[in-house]
Image (tube, rainbow, N blue to C red; front, side, top):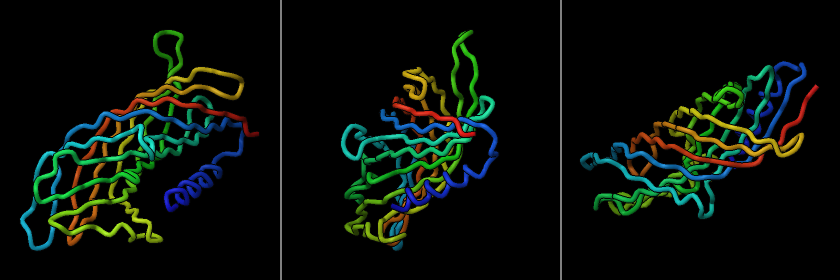
Length: 222
């Protein structure tokens, strides 16, 4: 619930921009990520640090699904966008001290993007996106037999702001009707996170290439 409250607040903030004629759009995208292996450090009070290369997989086609929602405000082929990507991370190579380490009710990447329409391949319009934001993570883990209580933090929902994220993307829209379109997009995200565990935290970098597609709806605000 907290992530939707945050999204609603930022959407209202976007509406305070210029009141001149502009195009708004909303999108719902689905797809899959390709995760990149990165080092992880587990720090737990009273124990030696664990350092290893984390291998995460995502299960994008099992509920809750991998998705990307986006709200955009366009003007003169440029846009400000509010985006949320719902990632899921399962550690596939835990050492014996870690019983499990997952972030599956959301390794949520919430970003504010600046987007530009450009022409590539002569006549074809593409959209380039650059953005930054926060990681809102739902920690689920057991380290050295100590299971993390998920009913903590804001409203006891288990979500934590764990670090920053960088978002890069290249998209192409295919018109369906005057208002609707199909979005096809490739993305790259890189993030840093301090994820809580019992008596400590896990420090990790995460990067992934993602391939998404979905339906968008646009309308003009005067």
